Amino acid sequence: MSDSGAAWENLALQGSLLGYVVHGMAGYDLEKTRKELEIPESYEIVHMFAIGKPADKSVLHERMQKSETPNSRKPLNEIVFKDEFRE
Image (cartoon, rainbow, N blue to C red; front, side, top):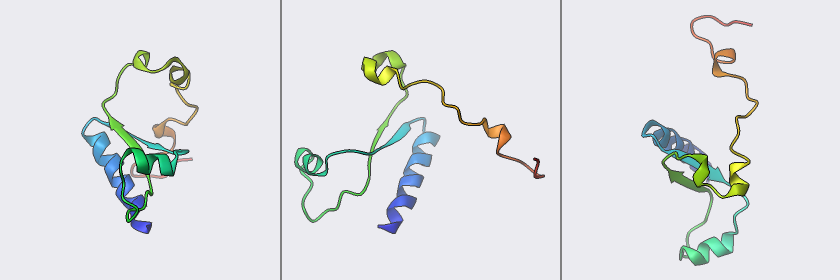
């Protein structure tokens, strides 16, 4: 299972490169997922994610629209440096 994290990362990076949003999910029901997607017992469900094209948040359910706000993360130019380390 250790390779699944690297596979997920590469899938997310390639999706982004191609203009897709790749969104990892948690809290899914393993047995319902197995049943709905007809996944054989011989397969282990390790990760769940959605892949799609970006859209306006108005197409989302009202409950989901509320969570689509800018986060409080630092801008990249504050944490990524080129050539020299800056404080």
